[in-house]
Length: 266
Image 1 (tube, rainbow, N blue to C red):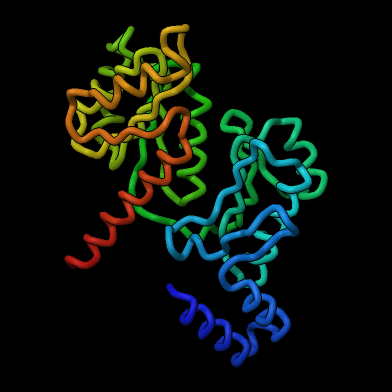
Image 2 (cartoon, helix red, strand yellow; image 1 turned 30 degrees about the vertical axis):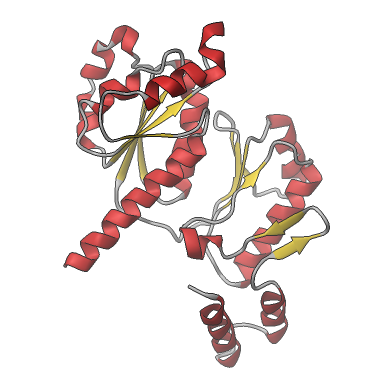
């Protein structure tokens, strides 16, 4: 949807009385983006272009900055009656405590380190199953970042933790996770071999996520990243180190594209 169509919708809402002129004026002033003091410019239309709202990267921002950004995004959703999540990643528990003081309804996913305002009914309810697999227990925080992001995007998620190559029978005894999935996200540190194994068993797309877990020669995830890039299993996409969020967004785009193609063929 382009700006002309957005403007037409706003004017139509004013005409039918569902939107106050003052609210419409505020929306028109911030049609491209909304500046928040001197430190942020919120892209309110990202969900229209990319299918998911702009997400706040928590690291490096003060709690006060995060609060102001989240409140502005929440206000926009309420004014336009958009049931969209407002989400911030990489939020430590101590920071969340400060955020919740100003935004009491804020949810916290402690393992994923995600804080989010979740509408009662998410706008994005899409078909498709995303299964997420970890090599080890230490990889779970990155995997949970992917899982929570996928769930807030409206997708069904299945989790299978701690089935790495050191005990490959753990994966092989749970092959239904591989066979049932529409997209697989495989999260691994150390040498990062698990996505290659899963890629050799799966018909669906496999998204590999290296983590910064491992001893010194793992170079904070670089070893796992290179292993995944050099996988002999074909058709594996590789994310950056510890980027569970990006993996979930990519998985969602794959499923939405597949649904779009299927709809056109009917």
